[in-house]
Length: 200
Image 1: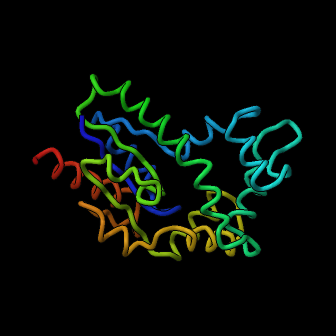
Image 2 (image 1 turned 180 degrees about the horizontal axis):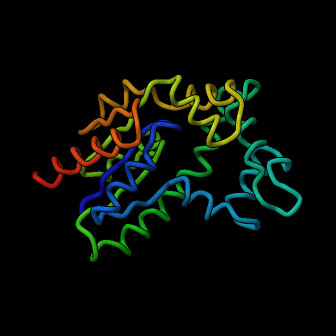
Image 3 (image 1 turned 30 degrees about the vertical axis):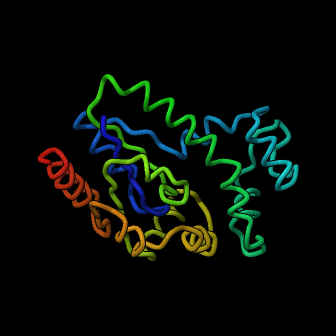
């Protein structure tokens, strides 16, 4: 089974690309979803986050307060090394669980997508056979993030600025999908890349 690494910043449209590939029989593993499933009350990952960033990153019921953690890791007052501290706590656990899920799919599929905004930062790109980057103009991404997550324009820009620039993703990817238009255009572009992959 070949692993397709799918990268792209927040608001780029990776989820839609995964849906297109799934409609053609290629499942995906979403790094953000793995993180959410691991970060449950009482988990080691939340304990480590509270130790590193302060107990206020947890709600009263022990669940993760994502807004507080995001502010401390990416906000205007975050320390320069805050993001690296967050990545050290989360990446290893996410990748370990991802490997387990890939192993479970290995005998049933020819391809699997690992949808990871931090594909290169985590080092998992080295495990991938094919890498696809989904990119979009920053102003378009900001609008999508604001609408999707209900956050301010400043917070959306801060999130984007903390991620790898699109031009660097393009340099490292085998295929690039530009998502500045409609969903239909994105779906068509994803199908074109899928055809190229299947024909190799």
